[in-house]
Picture 1 (cartoon, rainbow, N blue to C red):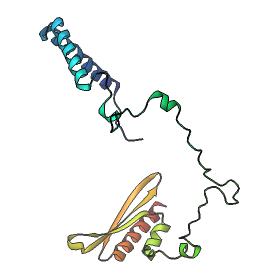
Picture 2: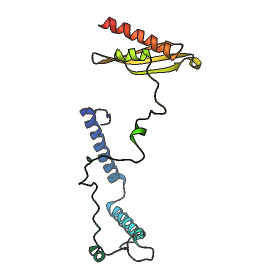
Picture 3: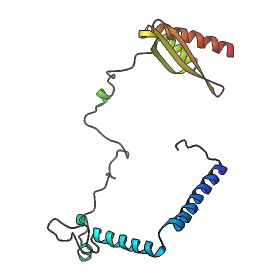
Picture 4: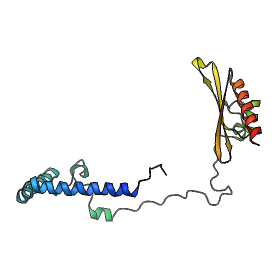
Length: 191
């Protein structure tokens, strides 16, 4: 469900009053300053006649007429239309494989177990320490002018809230080590 702001009932009633007031004042102004009813009726009749003439009246629109000028079909033709052949079953009910099993000839068990070409690097000692302390959303990014420093950041859930920690270092590993020291010191003080 999208985040929609909650409206106040007084605000809703105010909007309703403004809309109804606009309609009332607009209709009074049209009655007072608009054309007489007889002239308005003539204008409406002329508009309806112009629209009917522009749309072709009783003739079907051009997109419903075939290229050779004949109508696309009649009610008698549609009543006598042949029935469509029934489709095949989606699944073979006599198969011994469970429903939803899909066999792909391109994927074999050996290729499925092969290592991924761009696998993420293994966790360092500091990252393993942070994960053991309950840290989530670990990230290390270049920091400062030209990326001379690195910032390590993590979030630690605590008593239903989330606490954000960050530390800096000359290398990503040094920043992660400093972050691990900070989180460890905080967790010892909290327990």
